[in-house]
Length: 54
Image (cartoon, rainbow, N blue to C red; front, top):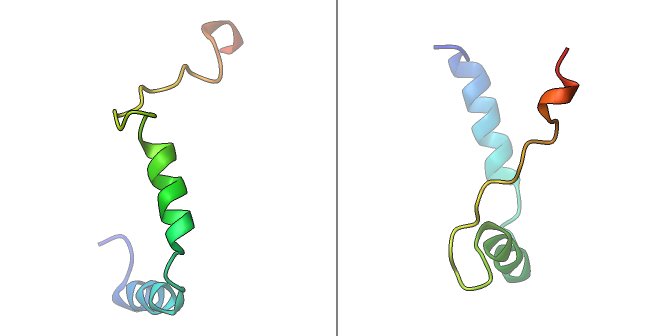
């Protein structure tokens, strides 16, 4: 196990404290994660082309 039980418990406690997302946020994230017709989006091109490799 990479993280100990104490760390995992702390993370879970912090997540439990977080407010639920608004309906607007959920809809915006859904729009971002899907295409305009509900199709999965294609991966974007790499930020760096092969010319920027050392």
